[in-house]
Image (cartoon, rainbow, N blue to C red; front, side, top):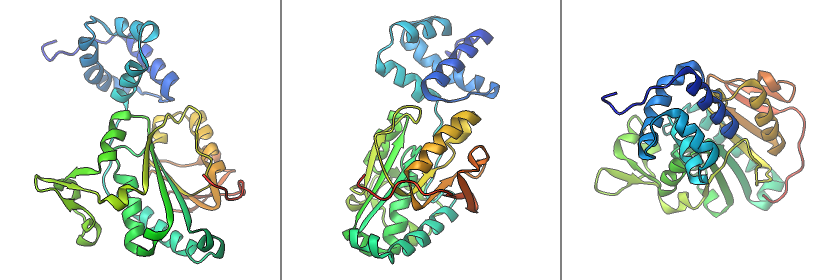
Length: 283
């Protein structure tokens, strides 16, 4: 093809789908065929291969961990923005306000949050900005936000805390006040906010090194890429990491029907565990 794309047979598309499901738990629909061709063709060309069959064979036989990660990165989609589905952050601010009055939490001054599928960082940075804006005293607390994503490229970008000024379009002055202009059309998240966030690559299908418990988990627009059994396993594991008072925030097109016996719906795409997991301990 003139645009450098390589033709993809039905058998090859099925092989790609099987591979990305095995590696990342992602269930890829027929509608993703064009995405597969456009994103993987450049990698196939770079490897001096001729067909997608050659590429799949390469992944099966000769690929390094970096080659495998490049395959996964190419097939993940990262669409996000600051204060996306802002009712979640309003709820989180109210939730944390209640925690600040809890004698045990006031004594420990410890808060833990997880942004699972953090993409380029807008979600965890929004969590931090919303909380620091509402409760400036948290600067002296032990507040930590874990931000993870399977795509190592977006994790590296998120760590810089640098964005374009037009990424702030639509934000009120109150919500955009933390961003520091860099003078070249870029803005940066201030140091004290970046220090509160640990960005880590994480494949949700693999072992999770963190122990929790978390006061809230954001896992929004992640489950849409998984089939129901995979969703059930993932949300069950997340429920085990939530503190008894914790909340799980999911995407507007998602639900927890597959694990409805473990969570109760308490707001618009906001859930709470029905049974109490383990008591609070150091993460």
